[in-house]
Length: 461
Image (tube, rainbow, N blue to C red):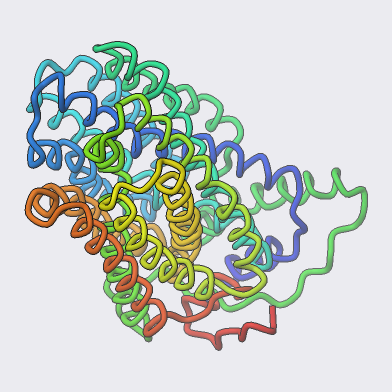
């Protein structure tokens, strides 16, 4: 046990949410916004390049998946955050991601664009698990679902921006897709702000033996909270015992962790097959259904706006009814709504019905993925949290890579309904992993979850 880590964890857990916490949320959320921008802009770019470069469905599948393939390696690199620190690796992943997005603007053919997108995925794949781990270590257990859920709501803001750029720039200019990639370099500007505003995770510092710096960070947070509230801080209760740093295999598979690891691998693999297959191909599915490129982009914009309400609602609901209910419930509803959506597209329903069902699907998928990014990092101790969630993200990224490729083969063979059958089945299988193998983590301190302490019931938090 590390006494200092337990002490500092207890001091962090008793703090009320403050402007300091919300400022951390805003800075990390801005980076998450551009992750959402890039993850969704490629669907619009692929739809535009389909005509400009005469792409067949299989080539489009590989183009959409190229960045996702790179995130498999990036997720492996996320493990360096357990050795080098959350802050440092967050900054390097942001710089890499931005520079390669800018390079994509100068792609001269399909292979060069696929190559740049693949390399860009290194930064994106590392950044997502690092941000999720980082934010969870800065907030108390009773607000972790809410704050990390709200952090996830920045992702659809980026998706909305990408849809707006698609509508205003890509659809009106044959070379507009290059400007879209150039905009993806903006996150590099965040590095300067993050150096000054973001501290290193004090939980990580204490476990790595940086005792003095860990104390200084916690004292700074306490001072900021005390200055805002103008009242004495709550008393420090006895914290959970924090285990010393453990090996990767022990952290991922020892002391009951193996079941949680298998659950997370299956959840992310199938959830991302469905998500990437759905949103990566959405503009093209709209154009194949007879809508103009401009109208397709407009519909995607509306669907992305619909992504936000359930993200926010789900963020608050996770601390009320639990992670499993929000995650698996919305996953099952996503599967059901996806089948209905495929049916109305196949039978060329009215534009209003098609748009309404698109909004419904987006609504449920949003809450499912908001819960995933909260639930995933909670499964591991501080010493292996970035490694554990990064490893799980590898399976998610493999699924996300395969999703658009699978759709590229399914679409010409089985049509639109076949596409949505694959997407819906993926969401249902992902939910089953959580329902069968997952523990409820609502209101439980991070190190109690990873240490296999007793899980709280839905009524205790």
